[in-house]
Length: 55
Image 1 (cartoon, rainbow, N blue to C red):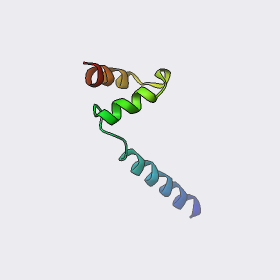
Image 2 (spheres, rainbow, N blue to C red):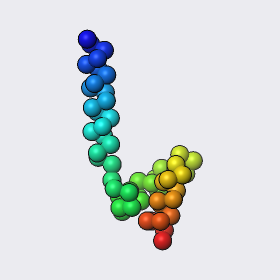
Image 3 (cartoon, rainbow, N blue to C red):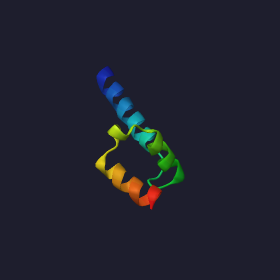
């Protein structure tokens, strides 16, 4: 019973944290991505960064 409660709490925390990230293409998102090491960027992040932050 404890494991189920702990698992549900962890899943809920992850879902809530995802809602706090800035919208792709916003000034905050571009600034956050500039601070993130380039080696950790996903292919989608590279494409979105070029589309929204450079062009």
